[in-house]
Length: 290
Ligand code: URA
Image (cartoon, rainbow, N blue to C red; front, side):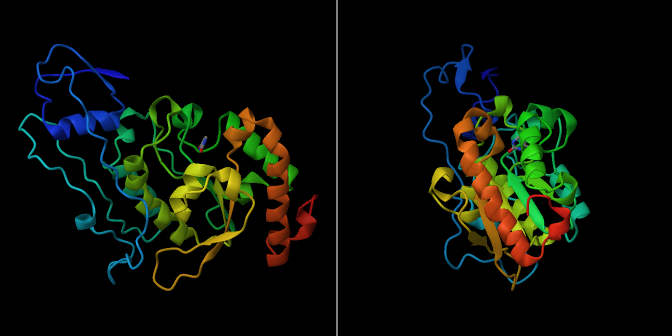
């Protein structure tokens, strides 16, 4: 993506802002910017260091002081620095939706058409978390309604699970331009909301669709090809919350490209079904393939 560089946008903060917008090339004739060599973008580490727990009150907030701050004071003409971290205070899913909709700390919001929150039954025992909205999701403001969403629906149906009976959301709430991979900074900006989302829904089983969701929430470095279909657990941040059984899945959009992986994806679905049966989730009579 090319953006024409305005002379006023010369501070480091402005360059960083442009980089986060996806600008990777300088056009125009601003001396000092042509040939400017960017140092590697600062990323907010996603790992949750041992002992980094929330302060006692309010619950599920993150400390601003733990995050990198801009080094240079912005010039009066620079865009204001974006808030880097969300103070998540929502106590209900509706409050959470409103809080994210009002959040200005993720640069993706600027380029997206719509905010994409969640779909399905928030009281469902099954919560699925994907990566980020694509083009169709951005257009409709609803997750998993494009081609990969249709495959997702077919997979659920084949396993005897109705989409309306599950809850589905994403790791990011705005579409990355051109469906590019989200940056660590964009993921980190949305993460406190996603974690709060899980804590509020309290699913019996959490299914992470694809590498971005799995790596982000499980804080693992292994790729999805290694960890899909293997049970692990996710512990919500709320005080005293019990670990939630968690199963990483291949992302449906990967399955659209790599049809040979569908066989393994089906095995993973059967692994999920088995656990659902053991936990008494959705009576077997409701599920033709149980
Ligand atoms: N891919 C995702 O991860 N989420 C969507 O909502 C759509 C496509």
